Length: 115
Length: 112
Image 1 (tube, each protein chain N blue to C red):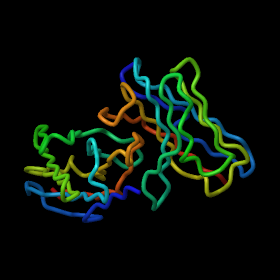
Image 2 (image 1 turned 90 degrees about the horizontal axis):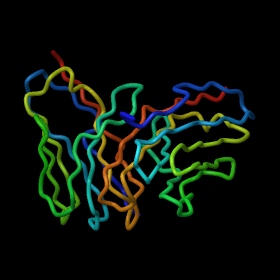
Image 3 (image 1 turned 120 degrees about the horizontal axis):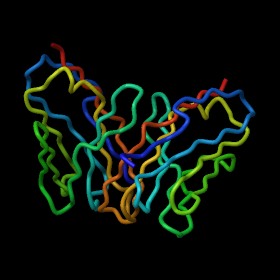
Image 4 (image 1 turned 90 degrees about the vertical axis):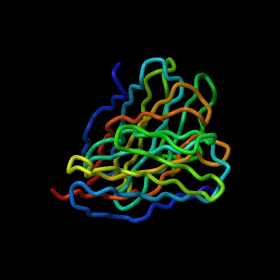
Protein backbone atom coordinates (compact mmCIF):
# COMPACT_ATOMS: atom_id res chain seq x y z
CA UNK A 1 0.00 0.00 0.00
CA UNK A 2 0.92 3.62 -0.33
CA UNK A 3 1.07 4.36 3.38
CA UNK A 4 -0.25 3.54 6.82
CA UNK A 5 -4.05 3.49 6.91
CA UNK A 6 -6.35 3.66 9.89
CA UNK A 7 -10.06 3.17 10.38
CA UNK A 8 -12.40 4.60 11.30
CA UNK A 9 -11.24 8.17 10.84
CA UNK A 10 -13.71 9.32 13.48
CA UNK A 11 -15.49 7.42 16.22
CA UNK A 12 -18.06 8.78 18.65
CA UNK A 13 -19.12 6.47 21.45
CA UNK A 14 -20.90 6.57 24.77
CA UNK A 15 -19.10 6.20 28.05
CA UNK A 16 -18.84 2.56 29.04
CA UNK A 17 -18.89 1.14 25.51
CA UNK A 18 -16.02 -0.81 23.96
CA UNK A 19 -14.31 0.44 20.79
CA UNK A 20 -11.92 -1.09 18.27
CA UNK A 21 -9.49 0.91 16.18
CA UNK A 22 -7.74 -0.59 13.19
CA UNK A 23 -4.32 0.01 11.64
CA UNK A 24 -2.92 -1.29 8.36
CA UNK A 25 0.85 -0.72 8.25
CA UNK A 26 2.99 -0.20 5.18
CA UNK A 27 3.49 -3.50 3.41
CA UNK A 28 6.72 -5.17 4.52
CA UNK A 29 7.10 -3.09 7.70
CA UNK A 30 7.68 -5.40 10.61
CA UNK A 31 7.38 -2.88 13.44
CA UNK A 32 4.05 -1.26 14.35
CA UNK A 33 3.41 1.41 16.98
CA UNK A 34 0.35 2.97 18.61
CA UNK A 35 0.46 6.50 20.02
CA UNK A 36 -2.18 8.77 21.52
CA UNK A 37 -2.48 12.54 21.12
CA UNK A 38 -4.76 14.21 23.65
CA UNK A 39 -5.91 17.82 23.51
CA UNK A 40 -3.28 19.97 25.11
CA UNK A 41 -0.96 17.00 25.57
CA UNK A 42 1.90 15.77 23.47
CA UNK A 43 2.02 12.49 21.66
CA UNK A 44 2.43 9.56 24.01
CA UNK A 45 3.49 6.02 23.22
CA UNK A 46 1.03 3.21 23.96
CA UNK A 47 2.30 -0.10 22.58
CA UNK A 48 4.49 -1.53 19.87
CA UNK A 49 4.92 -4.80 18.01
CA UNK A 50 7.97 -6.21 16.27
CA UNK A 51 7.54 -9.37 14.24
CA UNK A 52 6.63 -12.32 16.41
CA UNK A 53 8.15 -10.89 19.59
CA UNK A 54 6.03 -10.14 22.62
CA UNK A 55 4.68 -6.59 22.32
CA UNK A 56 6.00 -3.77 24.48
CA UNK A 57 2.92 -2.70 26.44
CA UNK A 58 4.70 -0.33 28.77
CA UNK A 59 2.80 2.73 27.56
CA UNK A 60 -0.74 1.44 28.00
CA UNK A 61 -2.49 3.70 30.54
CA UNK A 62 -4.75 1.02 32.06
CA UNK A 63 -5.85 -2.58 31.67
CA UNK A 64 -8.85 -1.35 29.69
CA UNK A 65 -6.48 -0.92 26.76
CA UNK A 66 -5.24 -3.86 24.72
CA UNK A 67 -3.93 -4.46 21.24
CA UNK A 68 -3.23 -7.34 18.95
CA UNK A 69 -1.53 -7.80 15.63
CA UNK A 70 -2.67 -10.61 13.40
CA UNK A 71 -0.37 -12.27 10.91
CA UNK A 72 2.31 -9.70 11.51
CA UNK A 73 0.31 -7.08 9.64
CA UNK A 74 -2.99 -5.50 10.67
CA UNK A 75 -3.34 -4.34 14.26
CA UNK A 76 -6.40 -3.61 16.38
CA UNK A 77 -6.38 -1.39 19.46
CA UNK A 78 -9.28 -2.14 21.79
CA UNK A 79 -10.49 0.14 24.57
CA UNK A 80 -12.98 -1.44 26.94
CA UNK A 81 -15.48 0.47 29.06
CA UNK A 82 -14.46 3.80 27.52
CA UNK A 83 -14.13 6.86 29.71
CA UNK A 84 -14.28 10.53 28.72
CA UNK A 85 -10.55 10.88 29.34
CA UNK A 86 -9.97 8.35 26.55
CA UNK A 87 -11.06 11.01 24.04
CA UNK A 88 -8.03 11.66 21.84
CA UNK A 89 -6.53 11.04 18.43
CA UNK A 90 -5.03 7.57 18.19
CA UNK A 91 -2.13 7.36 15.75
CA UNK A 92 -0.52 4.28 14.31
CA UNK A 93 2.97 4.14 12.81
CA UNK A 94 5.10 1.51 11.17
CA UNK A 95 8.78 1.11 10.39
CA UNK A 96 10.81 -1.31 8.35
CA UNK A 97 12.42 -3.14 11.25
CA UNK A 98 13.10 -2.95 14.90
CA UNK A 99 15.93 -0.73 15.99
CA UNK A 100 16.33 2.95 16.64
CA UNK A 101 17.74 3.76 13.23
CA UNK A 102 14.49 3.28 11.43
CA UNK A 103 12.15 6.01 10.31
CA UNK A 104 8.57 5.78 11.51
CA UNK A 105 5.70 6.56 9.15
CA UNK A 106 2.35 7.59 10.57
CA UNK A 107 -1.23 7.04 9.55
CA UNK A 108 -3.91 9.77 9.54
CA UNK A 109 -5.22 8.78 12.96
CA UNK A 110 -8.58 7.93 14.47
CA UNK A 111 -10.31 10.71 16.40
CA UNK A 112 -12.17 9.13 19.33
CA UNK A 113 -14.82 11.08 21.20
CA UNK A 114 -16.35 9.56 24.31
CA UNK A 115 -19.59 11.26 25.35
CA UNK B 1 13.80 9.42 31.23
CA UNK B 2 14.03 11.20 27.90
CA UNK B 3 12.26 14.55 27.66
CA UNK B 4 11.91 16.69 24.56
CA UNK B 5 11.23 20.42 24.59
CA UNK B 6 10.38 22.65 21.65
CA UNK B 7 10.70 26.41 21.58
CA UNK B 8 8.82 28.52 20.66
CA UNK B 9 5.38 26.98 21.18
CA UNK B 10 3.99 29.21 18.45
CA UNK B 11 5.49 31.43 15.77
CA UNK B 12 3.96 33.80 13.24
CA UNK B 13 6.07 35.19 10.39
CA UNK B 14 5.45 37.03 7.12
CA UNK B 15 5.84 35.10 3.89
CA UNK B 16 9.39 34.91 2.58
CA UNK B 17 11.15 34.99 5.93
CA UNK B 18 13.73 32.41 6.94
CA UNK B 19 13.02 30.86 10.33
CA UNK B 20 14.45 28.45 12.88
CA UNK B 21 12.59 26.04 15.12
CA UNK B 22 14.34 24.64 18.17
CA UNK B 23 14.26 21.23 19.82
CA UNK B 24 16.16 20.07 22.90
CA UNK B 25 16.37 16.67 24.55
CA UNK B 26 17.66 15.62 27.96
CA UNK B 27 19.41 12.32 27.16
CA UNK B 28 22.08 12.82 24.52
CA UNK B 29 22.50 9.07 23.93
CA UNK B 30 20.15 9.07 20.96
CA UNK B 31 20.45 7.12 17.73
CA UNK B 32 18.49 9.53 15.59
CA UNK B 33 16.14 12.47 15.64
CA UNK B 34 13.08 12.87 13.46
CA UNK B 35 11.21 16.04 12.46
CA UNK B 36 7.52 15.81 11.56
CA UNK B 37 4.87 18.13 10.25
CA UNK B 38 1.24 17.90 11.37
CA UNK B 39 -1.58 19.75 9.64
CA UNK B 40 -4.80 20.39 11.61
CA UNK B 41 -6.84 17.23 11.94
CA UNK B 42 -4.25 15.17 10.12
CA UNK B 43 -1.60 12.62 10.95
CA UNK B 44 2.15 13.19 11.02
CA UNK B 45 4.28 13.60 7.92
CA UNK B 46 7.94 12.72 8.30
CA UNK B 47 10.15 15.58 7.09
CA UNK B 48 13.69 14.61 7.99
CA UNK B 49 15.50 11.95 9.98
CA UNK B 50 19.04 12.64 11.19
CA UNK B 51 21.22 9.77 12.29
CA UNK B 52 23.38 10.29 15.36
CA UNK B 53 26.49 10.23 13.19
CA UNK B 54 25.20 13.08 11.04
CA UNK B 55 25.33 16.79 11.74
CA UNK B 56 22.62 17.85 9.32
CA UNK B 57 20.10 16.77 6.71
CA UNK B 58 18.54 18.79 3.93
CA UNK B 59 15.33 18.39 1.97
CA UNK B 60 14.37 21.22 -0.34
CA UNK B 61 13.91 24.38 1.73
CA UNK B 62 14.31 22.45 4.98
CA UNK B 63 17.58 21.92 6.81
CA UNK B 64 17.82 20.10 10.12
CA UNK B 65 20.92 20.11 12.28
CA UNK B 66 21.84 17.93 15.24
CA UNK B 67 24.24 18.59 18.10
CA UNK B 68 24.11 15.50 20.29
CA UNK B 69 26.55 16.72 22.89
CA UNK B 70 24.43 19.74 23.69
CA UNK B 71 21.13 17.89 23.24
CA UNK B 72 19.83 20.21 20.54
CA UNK B 73 18.42 20.17 17.06
CA UNK B 74 17.20 22.98 14.84
CA UNK B 75 14.91 22.97 11.83
CA UNK B 76 15.65 25.79 9.41
CA UNK B 77 12.97 26.74 6.89
CA UNK B 78 14.10 28.99 4.07
CA UNK B 79 11.86 31.42 2.23
CA UNK B 80 8.74 30.46 4.16
CA UNK B 81 5.40 30.11 2.35
CA UNK B 82 1.79 30.10 3.62
CA UNK B 83 1.68 26.38 2.80
CA UNK B 84 4.34 25.82 5.47
CA UNK B 85 1.78 26.71 8.14
CA UNK B 86 1.45 23.66 10.38
CA UNK B 87 2.67 22.24 13.68
CA UNK B 88 6.24 20.96 13.61
CA UNK B 89 7.22 18.17 15.97
CA UNK B 90 10.59 16.70 16.80
CA UNK B 91 11.01 13.25 18.30
CA UNK B 92 13.77 10.94 19.50
CA UNK B 93 13.72 7.27 20.44
CA UNK B 94 13.31 6.81 24.17
CA UNK B 95 16.50 5.82 25.98
CA UNK B 96 17.65 2.47 24.68
CA UNK B 97 14.35 1.77 22.98
CA UNK B 98 12.48 2.55 19.80
CA UNK B 99 9.18 4.22 20.74
CA UNK B 100 9.47 7.89 20.00
CA UNK B 101 9.36 10.62 22.62
CA UNK B 102 7.84 13.77 21.18
CA UNK B 103 8.06 17.43 21.96
CA UNK B 104 4.80 19.38 22.16
CA UNK B 105 5.51 21.06 18.86
CA UNK B 106 5.83 24.52 17.41
CA UNK B 107 2.73 25.91 15.71
CA UNK B 108 3.87 27.92 12.71
CA UNK B 109 1.77 30.47 10.85
CA UNK B 110 3.14 32.03 7.68
CA UNK B 111 1.18 35.12 6.73
CA UNK B 112 0.80 36.03 3.07
